Length: 275
Length: 264
Image 1: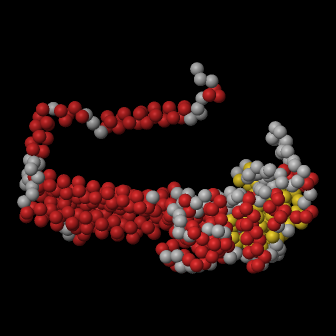
Image 2 (image 1 turned 135 degrees about the vertical axis):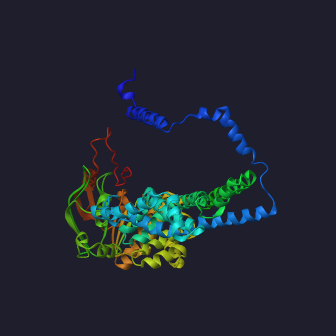
Image 3 (image 1 turned 45 degrees about the vertical axis):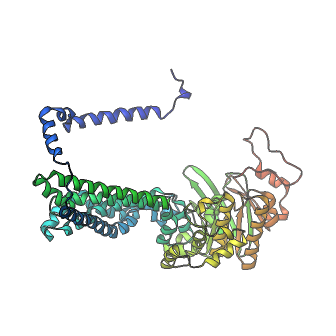
């Protein structure tokens, strides 16, 4: 038996939390009808084998490669343009939503006033709205509004991603050391300047890494949206699947792998430069 | 009258940092604040710098009450006050030149401030203040690569570059060796005398306070114990100021004034 003074006071809460997490997880498994055994049934194995057998060899004739190149470029363009538009909205909203720029908080050890909290609420609400509707729904909507093609994908990514970027940027601003910015604001500096000199230097590596990761997600999302007619690799994958051209699907998945690898290398390079 | 603290109290939650402190400091005066660890020296300086709002009593700076002003007017007032922090809060990735130039953000407009972030607009100015502190070679080094003492000097350089009318320094030399500490304090005093700047410094080294400052204020447990000219500070006053009943062995007092005070 442990003596009272040798016991870690955090032990009981941790134990309870673990039990609670397990208790929540179990009904989740039941509700989602997860049963990995289904994969091993002979009939299903046959189906999977038939589907994947067609993947080899990947298609590589000149005409198809030309098509693949255009589709890949289009996917990249959709993701990049969508991210650029998203940033236009995300940067100002994150500055508005973050507590980091509160003048009042600077002289009250980080506690912002009630009024400024009230102003921040609608901005946070806007960010929640922007990201709560999945990009595929926006894409379906815009495909109807602006017609089939990449424009719908760009707009869908811009809207959803501005919500995600805005929220996470605001949280990154709040998570870094606030003292440099507070000291500047206590010295008479304006909010934006205090942000640039006090918050940005500590936050920039995290911001860049998250932005590149989101760009990678945008590439993936633009592929998914291709299935509903928003152009790029996704539309080609959809067409090839309908024609049971497994080789073409395999080539496109390889191109896709290359894109994600590229994003990963870029992120690592930038973090290395900024850390 | 530059600084007028009137019956000011300050609380951090349950802890009372300052209680009914009243002070008047005239333009161009040079004042040292001494006292044991946790006496409220930093709190008093932060209060005078408008970094914290007094929980009771009031504060007057340049004849104005900063906490009665609009937030824009208060920011303009704050630009005339420089505060040197004991451990200057500088982002480790920021370059020294940027950290020093940030001293004038209160005087520059936002646009110039942001431009200066990309392209330092006054490198000679930053180099000059750093040179006086023996740090000219660290101009383009990141703050994270500096030692504690070097960072303190960057903090002083920023405040000097700001050219404030009131310079408040919180243990500005606590991480420096004795020679550098002497030099830096002398520099601060010369700067204050040459430009008619009001200088207030909290110090844990009593001999430095007595050697460099004409007026010394002793505080203990959030109250002013004495406030007199440096030559009037007697050994009895200091004994009473630093007496510590909680330590098992009493602090050994030498015959001279060079008492070993624990760092705040």
